[in-house]
Length: 619
Ligand SMILES: Nc1ncnc2c1ncn2[C@@H]1O[C@H](COP(=O)(O)OP(=O)(O)OP(=O)(O)O)[C@@H](O)[C@H]1O
Ligand SMILES: [Mg+2]
Image 1 (tube, helix red, strand yellow):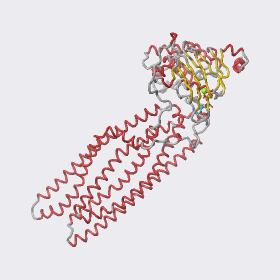
Image 2 (cartoon, rainbow, N blue to C red):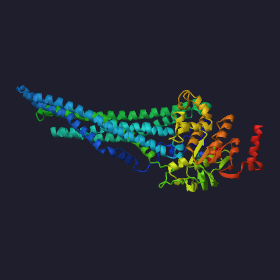
Image 3 (tube, helix red, strand yellow):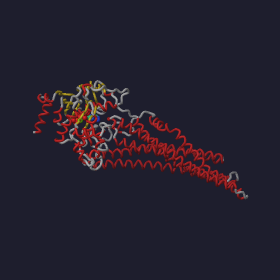
Image 4 (cartoon, rainbow, N blue to C red):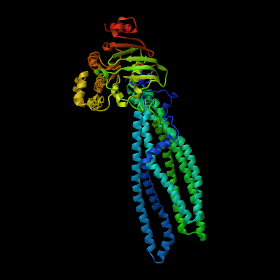
């Protein structure tokens, strides 16, 4: 596969969904070149509007931890004070301990509930914002970006990557705060209860910390590999299903299946690696924790026997230690979600850092009303040179003036640059050099609405959005009335087939019974363009799906649509050329013939040959 253009026909070899393995193009990678600090800046900008609410959630968690960690302290008090007092006949202290314990449990439950609710709100708002940003940004990026960064990649950005951020925000951060807080609380409690036991517990943090660092380093690598592997599975899936027609046409199923199996297995393997790292970490941290507990129990028992430590304090210390080491596993979980969220956020930041190669103007300009009382405007290609980002120069140096209202047919060999010319005029791309002018104004300076009103392009694809037939026509002019929509359809000759659909204009084009043929799709696209009423209309192979009677009908309709507009009609079928005022023959990005159709036919040039061959084929 060499190229994919925005207007690639539905079924060609070009659609072949298997991509070259590694083209060296950075857009083939999940992580786009990202300016330093972009990831951190993205995170800051996401959390900035939630400062107060994030503060509240942390406060809730602090209080909840205080309630939870009071437990062992109450146990120590019960053993050392309340039980002896009870023996002496005073039951007040024991009742107080019981009530205190119950109160702490209730408070911790209520606080936890409040915390979960508050943190879920914060994270949902962050994710809502992020998904919206990804969609808006991806939609704003230029055509050349989408030609290289596949839709599969975009889907994984806005699904798996957003999901891993959700896990971090909803589960991971809670774990982290809980772990850190309980470390602080418990260390303080232990040191306060008994300096020696507390010191042993604090000393055990050193090997645990080293273990965490080791895990973090190794897991980081593994998680990055895993998320790339997941993305590759999604990309393959989406591309195959997008290209299901050529897959069938070329019997690619078996080959695709084995390619998919490779990616799927790689995903499985990276998952296995991640689990293995996790298992090593859990086992290692338990070992450290249990060794510390064993040491403290031994030493503490000695001291209780010799009378230098109260039994209640030792019991509380052991209870605290269990609580101290329990969250270590969860710290591992947090690191997991942190690693994958960091990898995901990096990819999202890379996407959001892309700037459109066809930017909106800083000071947009409006055009004065068209001269001459008809919608058409003058088009000028002024010293235009153009090369796609990948590949050589397509238009070497191009000068062309189309007077307002002229209908120009562009013909030429395949790959000559006809569609490129059209896409430059529709501003899908900007020229590498030179300018494209609409009534004397550079397209780069036109405001978006002005450009939309100015130039409309209809391609062979004739894409239909989900919705009704009427909705699809109304895309040309969203405020159009039903009557205007029907008028446009009638002018094009689409009214008959639309009326025959199950629900007429209200037929859903994606539902059963609403399926319409390629030629009918094209008629809808024409009606849409007519309704848009542009100054310049470009038809790129737009009649090629129509059968001959259909084409004749469209030709009549086209004459109506094109009247008064500046029109560029690119067609392989020469019948279309008959309605043109002027014919351009292109070759290797240059115009090699230019004249009135009759004049060229009468001559001895390339167009005369083409036309003669076409006549003969009809005879
Ligand atoms: N998106 C793209 N990226 C890179 N190169 C491209 C892209 N689109 C087209 N090209 C290259 O630019 C050249 C001109 O292509 P263009 O689509 O303009 O030809 P065309 O005259 O419309 O051909 P056809 O009659 O087959 O539609 C070709 O060599 C093609 O390979
Ligand atoms: Mg083309």
